Length: 257
Length: 250
Image (cartoon, rainbow over all chains, first blue to last red; front, side):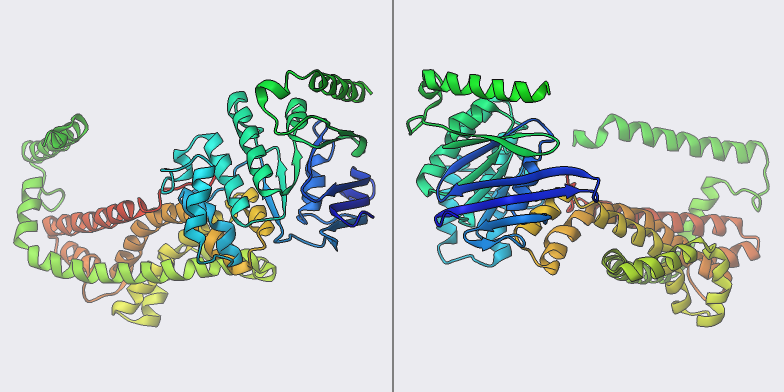
């Protein structure tokens, strides 16, 4: 086992609904290094969300070894921040109070909380929206608040399940860029579940491809594209196109099985 | 000022005035006996004549209604939380509550009066019984309506049971609970008045019984209108207070 791995799974298996139920994860093994950005892609129903929930400690796994920061995963960890497709915002809390939700719950508010909140609002491009309520924001802004909330708790590992899945393409591109800025500044370990191949390539150091029924890893693709990445230049690189074609082939083959 | 002259209010006012005039005309032209159906003008003058009595009896009824409602308002969420989180209570207490709810509570009134006497407490209990079940059901429904993704989020945040209850479940349940209050408040009024019918010394229900016993139909109608106004005002207060809970948990 790699000592510097932030996340390390070995032969993790998860079955839903008894012995003859769906095999959601079939002996999944993967390592994610500290400060690495890894995306998981695959057809719907391939267990990528299950994988993320296992890492988050939200659901138990049946067999295998799963470690997070060198400790076995046996429940949610305060070193982890989670962002889901549906922005996890409380409708009765303002943007600012939603941002501090994780901090409030964990009781880790420091003396510098107000300054950190102001800084986070600025970084998210939400200055002037501190006292707005979620229903007054667009979907993209809501998702930014949700990501900000996870970041406010200063997690070492950020797990994201289709965080931009419900957004329009333009907003999605913009948030991708912002996410890279945040990641580069704070150097978190990120695992992103997505169904968008270009998004996975654009953001990641490594892309893990899963197949469905049983859910297993079929390929790990290292993305050797220079950083910092930029939507207009990175996507026009010839390697970018090669990666896209390769992954489309891979997923197309699996889909016709 | 133009706001007060909006079309909806104008239409409603005209409609009710027309209805009153029609009623008045029908009673006079049809020569209907006053003890059968008093004319609106008779009722209105009776209300003015008996205004002190109406206010005094109304005050008694108001206290009964508000006390009974307050008990229901406090205890129904507590019981709802217990039933929601403790499986053994869900299997025992909840069926008992459903069974009790199925008893026609009007039929309970005589027993309640025998147990608690002609005074305030029996009417408070009646108001409570009428208000409690809708509030319990509303609170339970609200607790169940908490979005699963937020519950999972709180789990990921490692929130404690009490943090999840106070910061997530209860606020999520508030909109449904307020709707329950809108149902329960008029029911509490009915409960108190039914209690007064069965046995009481005072209250608007008592006034209705006394007035109809002496064939004073104008006063009977006046007291009924007072009950209706009381109920409407209380409903309106909840409506206004309920606007503080503007969110819908999604």
